[in-house]
Image 1 (cartoon, rainbow, N blue to C red):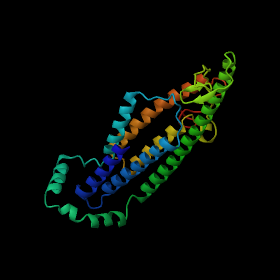
Image 2 (tube, rainbow, N blue to C red):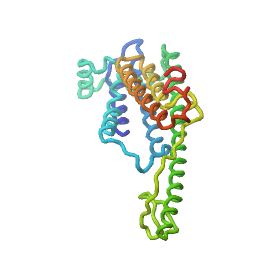
Image 3 (cartoon, helix red, strand yellow):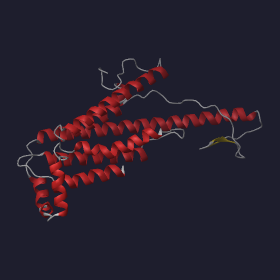
Image 4 (tube, rainbow, N blue to C red):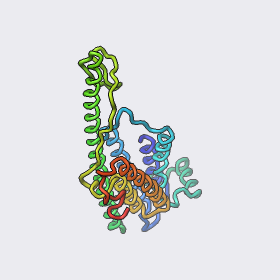
Length: 279
């Protein structure tokens, strides 16, 4: 998260201060707004991961997936840059501005005022993109909250079952007390008791789960679509959105197969994987 925020802030400063202004163009303002929305998205996901989501003690992430996630979120803001920003001439001008007379730095306050106050010719596009961003963010938060609540309930049921099972097994050895700990079930003396571990998860239901198996994936796609709209459909933003769509379509299909295999009778046959009534 820190890497993402540092990258986006540095890119915002770079775009605003040293890239050239073009009369009538909103490319710079659009890129700055897209980066800001991406910052908010990452901050919200960080808060959800730490304060909303519930992960079982046995949950693990492969080191390659962890490294990919780190590199992705550090590099992703680069795709929201205007297409011309990484041009060699622009980079050379940025270097000269940073080490030269600093003329570009002298007018930052006037340019900031103009960026905020000047009418935006694409305000309808921005309004639609912002509405989609807010809707998708709320949908994703509510989905994660529902999944976290289900996970906590499942963990509680599994612990309760394990304690009861441990007492039943322990009675054969004269044990009358079973205490759940992060390391497992133990007796009053701290000795481990072998207990049966069962899966207490249930089929997600309610809300958008009644339509699709992965509403949080659908929300993620909509968030990136909104970022591409804000960025005026720049090449980088479209490529990033395409990658997210491809990745989450495959993930949603795998999740759908898992649910239908694990719950062949309980899982609704009409529920789509990602897009209601379509896929």
